[in-house]
Structure formats: structure tokens, C-alpha cells
Image (tube, rainbow, N blue to C red; front, side):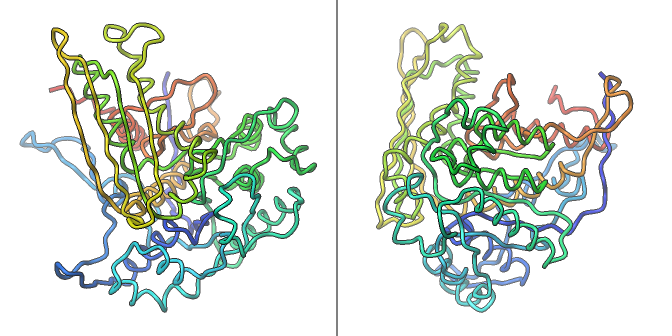
Length: 461
């Protein structure tokens, strides 16, 4: 099939609204953009630090575009291949169930060095989140004390209208061409899939009108964005995109993406299992233990919310195992255990400990044990920027084939190109999920290469 791609080169004025803006991720993203925009530097005990966008593939990675006359590979920054929104130009807004302004939220998060926070206080205190949706049944009971900035009542149809109005007013007030919405709020429990409630688009809309108990806050936000023609990205593991929500997105040709930011332990897992299986080594068990002390960890200490996270972290190896029937028989799978514990002392400095037990040559065993310590929000925040920036780019690209009769059309509503950035990649129905990190990264590069008329990268030596 012959494809022709058309990209609008004019970069629009773009706003990013975050659900859970006052959380660790939202406050850290906001602080980082302001620090970079204002060229801030600060001191810690090791010396002077300067604002950067490390950890963002659009801002801090390169891709090969060819070779020079001497046969040497030529690499360029990923964000120079196609016109993309610059993070410093993003207009920020959002919602939170807590009323703290972003300066207070940054202090509460305890992520950034104090000398940087001190410089950001006057820049961030003017940012105040809009009231958000709070349905206590969907998040842990321990979040109730935080919920002092919520939309009144239990009328889900009215909540939907309010969120839509918030998006329209944000766009108009800031004279924006586009808005991207990212869910970086608490992990919700899984919504029950109920026939006649959330199985079709029409049933879901009716369920919202009836304020049905199984319509979650994140699904309300997703529907609001779909109806406003705004891209919605789910950065948490719950099943926001119930079948009715996906059908609605396809009906409106609106973009959606999810689920769950892939920042640390799961990203390493998708690399290591890919390596082991492709090396002909058979992982027998994967045991992953985490403890963290931020509000995400507090919320995940409740069983229903932990179960949502457990599902997204556990499925990451499935396709890689299924690809090797020499090692694994049909239905055979490594033991895979995920544990998350809340330890307030460590705050945002998440600890991840993993053990991989594999069978090697002639019945031998290999054990790989890993320990990873990182500021959870400093890994997740660059992903939020990448998700927003690449989503906005995809809104400006259309394609046509011989089969479309020469008419250009947008991509499918589900932005699977974002799989590299998400633990449990959302794909369109009847499409296989790819979890291998290398394949996900190469998909981004090759799609970008196609947009500018370059052949796919084959890596043939």
C-alpha cells in the first residue's frame, strides 16, 4: 500500500490541562517548565544545577536520519525532525480535588531542591487548580482529607458539562488553538463493565445522564474531552477507556491514549525481558517490589487501587513471552508478582527491587537482582511533556492511501504511537499490543521518518 502523509507545519498555541494538577507530577511539570522558561539555576550540596528537560525523548534524545559523505551516521534531535510545540510555550491549567495553589503543591511534594523552590514560589502561586470531580468510591478513603476543592453534588451529567465548559473557557481566555488534557491524578479502582451501562457509546452517555455508580471521574473527563474534540491521555492504570468510551472517541474522531505512565521499573522490565527472551533465556519468575511515600503510594495502599496498578505492571511481558514458543508452551507464563508498599519516610524517592530467575543452558539457573532508587515524579514529568507534544503533532498529520480514494484522513482515534511512554498501551480493537521498549521506540522513529519521506530504519549492519 502506498501512503502519502500531510503535516501542517504551523505550530499552534497549545494549552495543557492536567487532572490532578496539584499532585507531585503536576506541580513538578509546572515547576520544570517555569524553571526552563526563566533560565533558572540553583545550588544543591554538590554545586550549581541548571534547568533541563532530561528524560524527555522529544527534548533530550536524537534519531538517525542517514549517513554523511564519509559513511558516518548523522543524528539530529528528535524535535527537529518535524515542527513540534516547545515545552516552554505550553500554557498550563487543570483541576485538582485539593485547593492548594501550585507553589504550595510544590512545597508539599518535596521533589525539587529548596533553592529552586525558593525562586519558583512567586512564579507558581498564581496558578490555582479548578475544582475537580470526586467520587469517593473510586479512590482510596485516605484521600478524603485532601478533597476540599470538588464539584458539588452527585449529578454526573452536570459534572460533564462543567468540565466541558472549563476546557472551552481555558481555550478562550488564553487564546489557544489547541488543548491537550492529561490525567495525572490518583489511580482509581477498575470500573465494572456492565452490559447496558458502559458497553456502547450511547449506553455510556445514558449512564452519565443517570449518574450511574460505575461511571468513574476519569471516564467523565475522557468523555468531556472527546465531545470537545480535545485529546485525552490517561496516565493512570484504571480502565478509563471502557468500550463505550472508545466507541465514542471513534465516533467523534477524537484522539485518546493510555494507560499509566511508564517511568521506571516497568520500563526496565520491558527492556530486560525482551533481552532475555530474545537471547534464548527463559525467565521463570519475575518478582517486583516497590515502596514509596508520596500521595500516589498512599492512594495505592488501598486494595482496589493497588489492583489497578498491579494489572498494568503485570501485563508488560505478555507479548514477549508469547513470541517465543521454543521457550514457552501455549498457556505457559513466568510467575509474575508485583508488590507496592506505602512508606511515608521515603516521600517521592521511590525504591524498586526486582528479581529475575531464568533457566539457562542445560537446566542451569540465572538470577538477576536489581535495585533502583529515583524521584518518581522526576521520571514521570518528562513523559507528560512527551505525551502532550507528540499528541499535538499527531493532530496535525493526515494520510491517504489508494484505498481512501485520494482523500486525506486523520489517524485512528487510539494513539498507539505513544506506547513507548505508557505501561499498558491502549490499542484499537483486534490489534496486538507491543510491549518491547525497543520496538516501541523504533515505531516512533519510523513513523516520523515516514512523515518526512525517509525510508524506515532497518539497522542492517
